[in-house]
Amino acid sequence: MSFLALFFIVVSLLSFVVAQLLLKRAMESTTTSGFRNRRFVTRVGGGIALMTISFFLTLGLLQRFDLSYLYPFQGLSVIFITLMAAIVLKEKLNMRLTIGALLISAGIVLVSLS
Amino acid sequence: MESASTKRGGYNVTLECEEFAAGRNRLRRNRGRLEDQMRGRPSGFGNPWLQLGLSVLCVFVSELLLKRGATDVAEPDNAFSWTGINGLASPLVWWAILLIIASFISWLYVLRYIPITIAFPLSRAVDILVPLGCWIFLGELISTLRWCGIALVVIGLALVAKPVAQIEERL
Image (cartoon, rainbow over all chains, first blue to last red; front, top):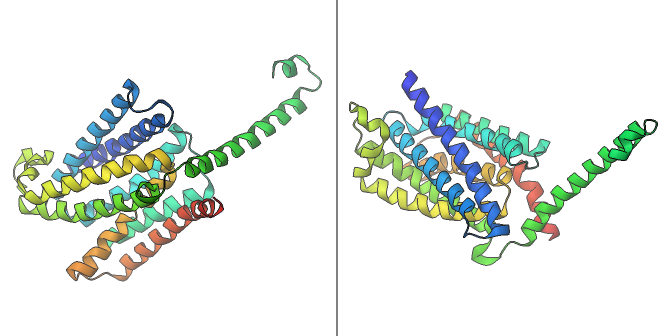
C-alpha cells in the first residue's frame, strides 16, 4: 500500500470520528435549547461537511481497493469514537463497554482479514 | 472546600469525605441521566432503538450499492478519481447516497436519545451484516476465520447492549 493511500485512509477515518462527536454535541444541545440557534446549526453543518469529505475519500479508495481490505480501518472507528466520547463528551465508560468495543473492533478486523 | 483547607487538623479527612461523596453523586447522576434520557424517549416509530435498526439497515444496503457503483465507473489511472467525485457517474452511487441521507437522519435522531458510547458500537452491527449479506444473497463463502470474527462482533454487541436492555426492562 502506498503512502498516499494510507494518508487518505487516516484522513477519512479522522474526519468521520470528529464529525460523529460534533453531531452528538449538536443533537444533545437540542434537548435544552431547540433547533433554532446558531450553535446547533454550526455544529451540524461542520459534522455534515466532515462526513461528506470522509464519504468522497472512501469512494476514491473503493475504486482502488477491495471493500474487505478497507473495512478493518472502519473497525478502528469503534475504538476511536468510544474513547473520544469518554474524553471529549465526558460520557461514562465502564469496563463492559470498553471490552465490548474492543471485541467488536477485533471481530471486524478478523472478518476482513479472511 | 475552603473551610477545610483553613483548618489544618481535619483537612485530609474532610477532603476525602468530600471526594467520596462527589464520586458517589457523579455515579448516581450518570446512571440517572441515562435512565432519564431513556424514560423520555418516544415510542412507536419514534423509538430510538427502532431508528437505530433502520439506520443500520440503510447503511448495509448502501455499502453494497456503493461498492458495485464504484467498481462500475472505476478509473484507477486518473489521479482526479482519488477524490471519488467521478463515482457520481454511477446511478447506483446516487441510490446509495439517498440511503445514506435516510440513515443519517435516523442516526441524528438516535444521537438525541442514546449515548454515543452505546449507539456507535451497536451501529457497527452492519459490519457483520455485510459479509452475511454476501453469503446469503451473493452465494459467497465465509471462511472459518471470518465466522470467528463475526462471533467476536456478536459477543461485543451483546456486552454493549445488555446493560441497556436491563434499564429498558426496569422502565
